[in-house]
Image (cartoon, rainbow, N blue to C red; front, side, top):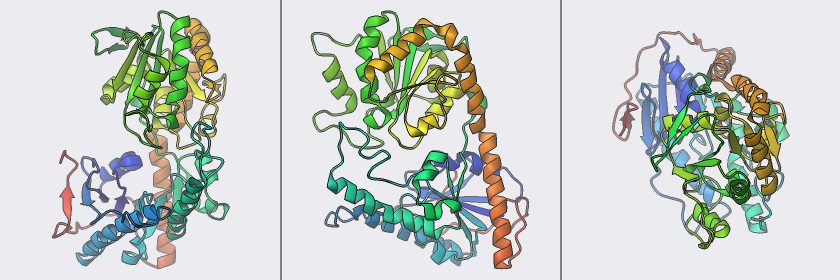
Length: 441
């Protein structure tokens, strides 16, 4: 069986299923990703790069669509080159969010195409216009509506689709929801266990230990989409009312979603200037900005945490929330739709109003002052994370792939022996294609 993965940032969400399939006898796994994709050891990755960027003169409402067309065109060229060399995938699993799969069916019309449908945008009722601090103008609303043209084509082009959560499923148009299955890709819960002996070495030489009053906050980047402003605005009250607590903050100064502030280099410096003037500076012996850290350090941050704050707009749920749960953290999460799907207030975590910084501080203080009362909630969080384990995710992906191939066989009339069909390798190296073996480029 031949499985082709397409993801701009491969492996992205396909890491566990791609690794599993690559380890199976009789399964040939190939991946396509941007020239910046990290790759996965043991999986051959073909890199591409659009030959130009979207034209600056293109109408701003459709500039992202032009960019998608350029991505799709480059991937089509690569697919046609593969096809000329005799390559035929049995199934293609792809994240279509950047346009890569717009023309896949022009190369392989009979191949089953499964899309990872991560998010369908709305001008109201989801992330956009959620935060009154950043109101959405009519231009922004029109841009969002135009942006969904790509996602409608993606829904129409695929044979089946996947989305990770029920809430993300609900955002897609009703006409397509029957086509989309809710399957979370899974996290490695076995590697994220609580450790009562855990320690964390700080850059200033200090050492934090599990059991200490340690507040943690984690995001890929420190920005409003992940509630960084609400969290920071809770800090003065928290630090004043609990003089011995330590705060550990993990995340970069870039932007994953939204934009940088107009009056500061990044959100960290903006919030520090707002909350901690020169005459009352932040005590950096108590608040530790670690930036982006290695995975092992990240695990230690979660393991020493006494209260872990996770805030998000109504947007894609972070892996970090599930990983914190698997680590036995006490979750203090925003009472927003994606978090409510995972956290039940008072059972496996505590929910707070996203914008209520005073309530966030009060909830954290109560948790730090009564750790024994939170022990059961932490245990339940770890138990709940099991439903999102990688074994569950991989198993459900395999069921989908097997069912898809059965359907493909029945409708196309071509025979397909599934997971363990021994195949001949097709040479795919050649002009215009860069191979990547998963090692650092």
